[in-house]
Length: 419
Figure 1 (cartoon, one colour):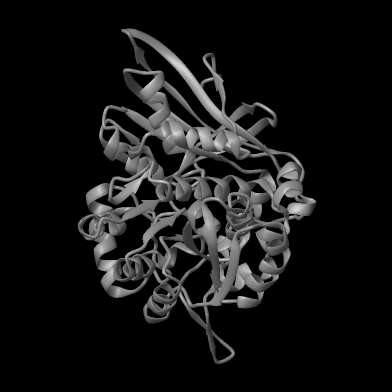
Figure 2 (figure 1 turned 135 degrees about the horizontal axis):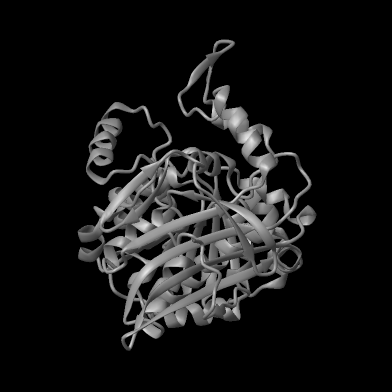
């Protein structure tokens, strides 16, 4: 019997909630909490007749520590799955510590206001020390390690697909395919078509901040930073075809570098079409991607948040999106003294995802791993307390759950190399 709170009711959260309700033997009591309670109530009304999971709902501001503590103490969750904005990671972790609950999220912490002086000072120090400029990184959450260990609690960071499954793939490759991994390329391809001139497939505010950040890769123990979208390759993706992919900075490389220091080079690529790049560049040029508040007709607004309100909600794209995603990892390294290549990936169909949980595949590929990670914590399979990322745990039960819950692996020993 497990009591679980899911914070958020957007596309990813809705997938995870659907999936939790398919495993009522584990997720016996589920509270859906969001700033907009009506969305939670609507989802409960849809799912409750189809599941044995007892669903309740709550209104909560994820940035309000006192409100979170009040909710957590009333509901008494064993784990809190934070599937909302990463701006709130730290305050929710604080509330989990106060109320003795495990914690899980799908993306590394970043601040909402990147001009805040105290944070900015620390950011500039970190940027010079580590060598990358992206606002999101694990450092702030890793500092909670001893606090969670002292309470015997787990904080599982970045348990979506990338980050999340990609780190599980690294652990799986090291356990089963390699004695030593030399290189890693993470490839994220969304071959879906939603029909809009411009829309993002996950939270537009986070997506656009991520993509417009300077790119970087990790080589020989150091970060190498390059201008955003300055490295492009055409790659043939199984189930999708040829796509242009661009090198980006991504948080899982930070944790993989920490946990697998043997890997000499790590890169992350994501596909984008010409229309997306053209729209994004234009919006950036006119200041619409800015996080700095401006005054408009006597009111303070944040340009990127205003843009988010104008763009289609990713949670509404499912019914109209066709095509597939293909996300995975290409490795080179040595096994028994012999050099080898290995590619492990997943293909997910947008329309099949919609038929199952009324969501497009980008939300599906993030929400399903979150449910799987929570299940492994609740059933005691993953039990080392502290703050961890997926690759620090045994990958086999995680991969097994993914295979059984809609995200099966495909393997290749002769992959097309990026370069």
